[in-house]
Image (cartoon, rainbow, N blue to C red; front, side):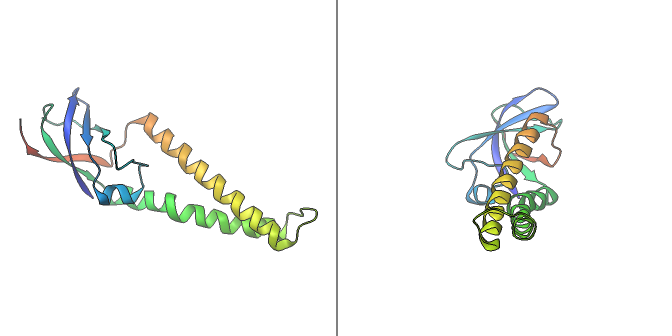
Length: 141
């Protein structure tokens, strides 16, 4: 996936790029980007770009697939496993096995999204993601 943005800072090792996410970027959901606001993306790369230049950014396909798995498939799998565990192994007084399974599925869904949220925050703190890179300068200042 490729996006364009404007370089706002280049300190040699990290480049901050301000971008307005397109519809494709906003619908992905991989970065929890609010597509109505300008976003600042920190790219760990050494490149000869100057503030004010418009650049093209590429997100590696492996990162996009990993993000899709974390956001869409992992919560579904956790929900199914928790449904089974609560239905078969957990005895909740006053509830049938089906109702216990439903409570387990909802619990699993909530916990998986909390886990995805915390993992996203962890990645933001690292700021060493090499899966996003500047491909080329679109327009110089």
